[in-house]
Length: 108
Image 1 (tube, rainbow, N blue to C red):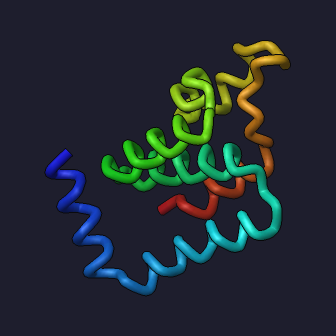
Image 2: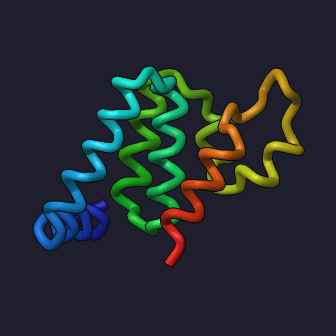
């Protein structure tokens, strides 16, 4: 993870305003009552889209601490396909609208 940690430090150093904005978005969502597990899945997906290995690993570990099942963590990367592969009782619980918005807002 040393390479990923370097990228994370670079991100913090090069774009401190963006780093603070990312933290603020998470805090606002938490204060608004968004489910903590869902919020962590969204953060994981954003990290995957952004290609930040450190952040992906960090959010996987945070998700595990919050009790997010391994199936959900592992399938976030293919959430569109996974929604049809799992039963409703094991659904990813990642509503299409936030996931679609996230994908659109992080597209280059």
